[in-house]
Length: 85
Image (cartoon, rainbow, N blue to C red; front, top):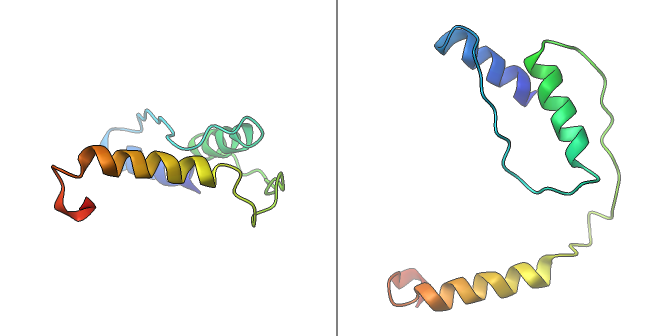
């Protein structure tokens, strides 16, 4: 769907030319599906993609590390952003 939306916008705005730089998690088990989906939408290819079930949605393996990084960022920016006080 996203590739199709980018293609539609490119057709309207810049004569069909598009550069797309996906920015998200780079899980090597999921990334090929995302690229295939994007490219097929850009190329107007109607292919059936099944959602890969690679891990439990109830388990966030990086949650604790993410919480640690957010806490450190808040501590460093506390003096500059009142919302972190």
